[in-house]
Length: 81
Image (cartoon, rainbow, N blue to C red):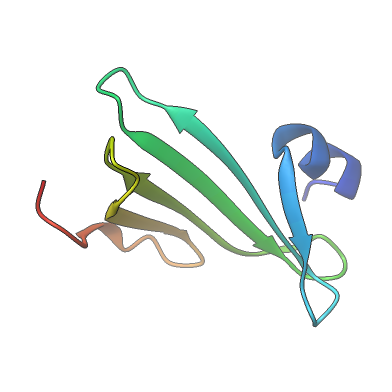
């Protein structure tokens, strides 16, 4: 389990949630020009509740979601490229 300081150093963006947890995210540009957003949702103790990737095309439209935690559901297409 990561601490709040560790999460803040890995994820440059976050918002506090109404249940006192946090939603962290960071964006990474792929070689193909897509943006991959890594999203981590934690509870008040910084225990991970959810982790997923969202893939956006060059226009910023969501095209794919990959839920990784608590259950790895694999890649799910949202929109055709």
